[in-house]
Length: 424
Image (cartoon, rainbow, N blue to C red; front, side, top):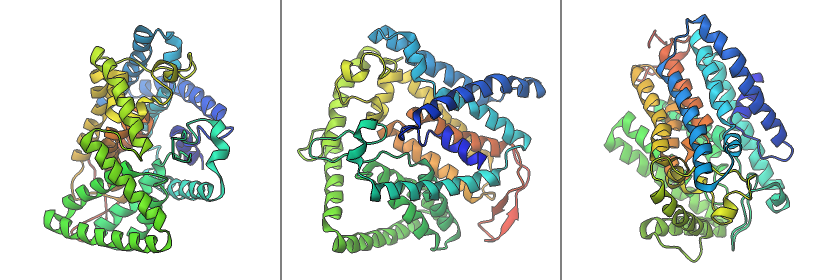
């Protein structure tokens, strides 16, 4: 339960829930003090040797805070202290230094991490589904945009839930099904995935599908991947048809949403029906002049606590996190974007260090989740605005690749379990 609590707080799962903001702020302080007081002693124990990934985390944290604070002061006149405080979540990234040490020393048990992640996948999926069924989001608008969406013209507000654990569960069971060829895992993945859709979920759906197709291709080759994709598509159409028979309005709205989204992407022009897609166009248009003026280091991060934040400076509905890569370049510039994206270089190298014959559901799900976040970053800026999440899985992958764990792996050739050998 302690590990589950640490992951929930470390991923800011309930940060915007009523009454949870003060607890989350206290967790930021606790993490900062834990790293400040404990990490130096751990490194002295190992002779002050730092891995490249640890050095990267130091560079990332420093660049994040400095760019966010200094650039916002230069461009908008925001006092530096506001910029520093907006980046207090970097304390969560700092705790990954402790995770790396725990994985390297064997203090952290990978099997426990796997079990807790699955527990949280089902636990948060059940909680969020129950809230959607029994609570009215309109009753919670006063709690802010972090808990419910801001109502757009013609749309109703909806809850905003962090789906990290649920998506991990989706990839866990989907990859298990792809790896073993056993269909009983797919309904579990589908059940979890359906809880993530909310009122939209268009970009998320496309990125999940692209991720699974990539791994299907890697595991079975292109011809079999295409055949399997056709079968999955037929099953999806059958499910959509059954849903349409029960609730035609739900399916029609969902299809219309996809059509509108593709129109916006392909034409770059606003639609008359999709307020959410239109808002992203207007936000991008507002950001482009600032990007052109400060392309390399960006414009920093403005705190909502300073003179109304972006709402006062660039319009009520301007949020850099809404416009993906454009929002990242707006805030951190090309330099900042490259630094954040470099985390996937470490993930790639760690995954490449593992022999193809050695794998596990945890490793497969971790790789799939990281590929998904890389794709989803284009739309949402995931690897920046929730860097503590993506970097946790990168650190997990790096830690596993650096040390042999008494974890059981599955052999694709034999289809049987075998013990992992030492690898680095």
